[in-house]
Length: 85
Image 1 (cartoon, one colour):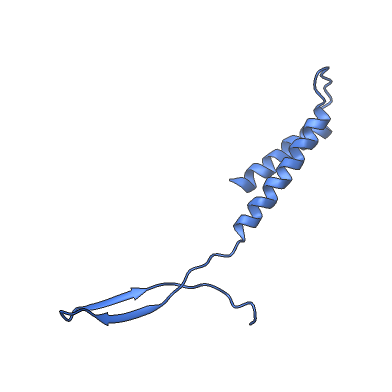
Image 2 (cartoon, one colour):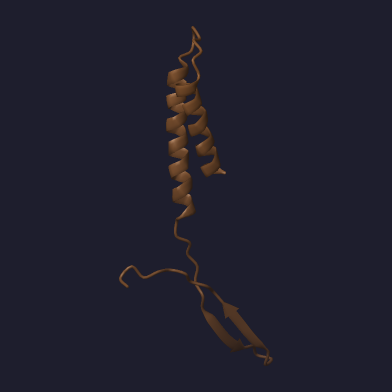
């Protein structure tokens, strides 16, 4: 949603800045368009950063037996990448 929202703000800001030639006495539409484009760019960068962040989990499998002889398994998962490799 954040990537799409960022692109939407960039498009609306570009339309307000470059394509719309309306003069409003109390509002500078060019400035509003630049603000929308800047906000859209920030949201787009944050969305891409969140998309590519590293996800961590650990996988360890241990088998054991309880006191009454039942088998117990436990699994954890790890996707950590060693930066030294």
